[in-house]
Image (tube, rainbow, N blue to C red; front, side, top):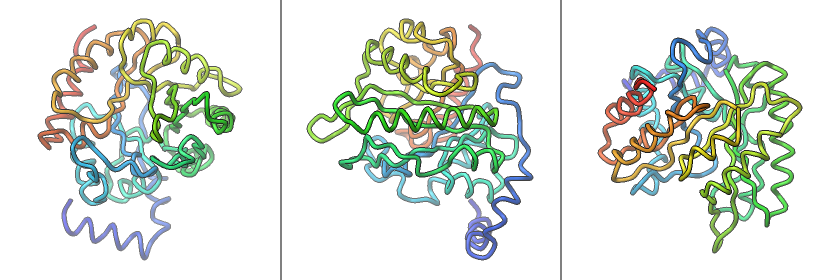
Length: 294
């Protein structure tokens, strides 16, 4: 980011807060699915619930300017369709002029702060359906962790159902990220077995008064064929945290992308903070997976 752009961003934030909605209203939008039938969306909503680590860097995402620089690089690469983020990040990117012609998915429930005693109480503390529609965004994403041993789960399910219904009322995508989870030694752990994913999917796809606009966002796990057989909803694969073996990760993504119903990737830290720090190279590698023939 040029120093002049950063200065202008800070001036807009301090002196011209109303410019956010002006820029949002003028943003050029695009269809959800255009010439390709698969999407690549960059996720950047992790800081909103205090999740700042990426790979071997425990506080990788704490520097907002560095994060924005990485997002600007990623969003400018060919094949990147859009971004998933909380209002603060979305509005920074809007003011920087980075979201014209891109999909913008607003992250909704960030109340389940990582490592807190209330982590399963995933309250809707960021966007709601009305603000997503009002800002001209293209959909809303919600985390839906189902913990059979935590009573907060039922409230999360109810709130997710309400959000799905309200987004559908505006004709907007509801991107739901389900997990079967529990506390293990004070830390939230996801059960990534096929059994657990099928059960979580079965529950969340029934939420809301209609599923007409519901999409799923799920991890790549063993026996993905069985997992994808559990739903007819359009499904995006989440990337997870980066590691030292990106080739193995890309191979897993590539295989899963060939399955019926899979409509692309939603990846954050694995592309924004790759082990070799080559953001453009990581994004290009992921984008190339979407171009390969079925």
